[in-house]
Length: 422
Image 1 (cartoon, one colour):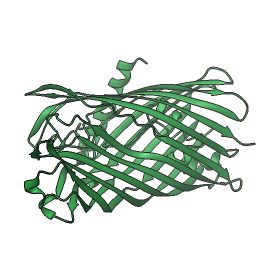
Image 2: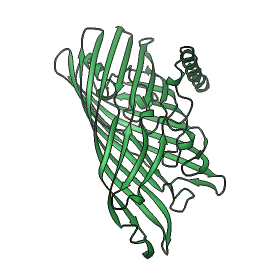
Image 3: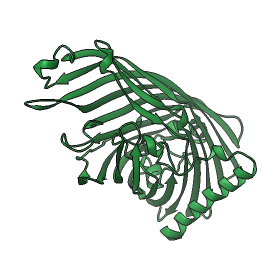
Image 4: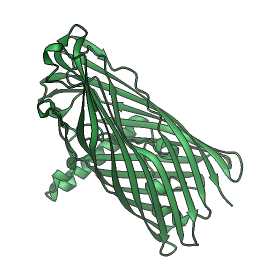
């Protein structure tokens, strides 16, 4: 299957889902095409990355501790994985008035650490450490949107213990509880000018939240596996944040403090994933996945300045739920080499009137490939590459009356080390 027919097939599947749900009066379940999945990070393990995000129905390595803990109970031995990815997004903004502006370089280097350990023949426990959510944008200090944002970042680091229990030879269940740490930064210019330029406003805060997931795996036969994963959302309250103001003109020093306590909050969405993997032959495995994320529960962000409430500001957002469709395959070249490829499509989360430069997303097509190279009976490495091609998007933000076209590409490379114990 070539890339173009594959993408056409993904599109037709989405249309089929819409038609079926419309006939049932449930059209609101599937969102209209918007942007790509909010700010969820898909680079969480190389097998998943190399198949464009597909893994819930596969979950055959230590990263099952994150994607689908129930699948761990089908393992025959403990497993461990450690890896890193390098993501380099490139975004251009085309203004109807001042031409093209390129976002400054932003490099994301997320790590992941997974382990799955046997308690008995039916029970495994797992640990997952990764970065499941993140956005970052970095614009020049004199660009047209400087009064909206010059630098913005939100990232989550998650630590999740989990357990998988096999009820019988065909069916297993799993669960996990995650401890999530977040960091948020938001810098913008304020149009009050001194000899040095506009005032610079910077918020920084940290938060903590808990989450959980419930999963299940079903193996009707030796060739087929079905996986289900429900992940909760989390709410982060950054009540002990701080905001600073720089380059304050003398005339307004009583209004703008150099530093003040401040607070903010953010939410991440609930999601449900359904995946399937099937061995077509001794060498070829195919897989598919559908994921539905409830971004509509993620709303506007407010930055409250405690010393002067008049300086508080908000980021207006009204998210929509998103849908992800992906398909991938794995081919065994030899006892020591396996290769993978995948394609995906994701709709999104933010309506046109709420799009701003902090998260300049659009619908995206995902193309990926990678492989596993085995060095011994116990040790191997996974490598991966993913291209996320965001469709060009023109929007007017109603909060700031800010209009323009956004276009983004993201390239991601990754490597992981796997170890399977005796």
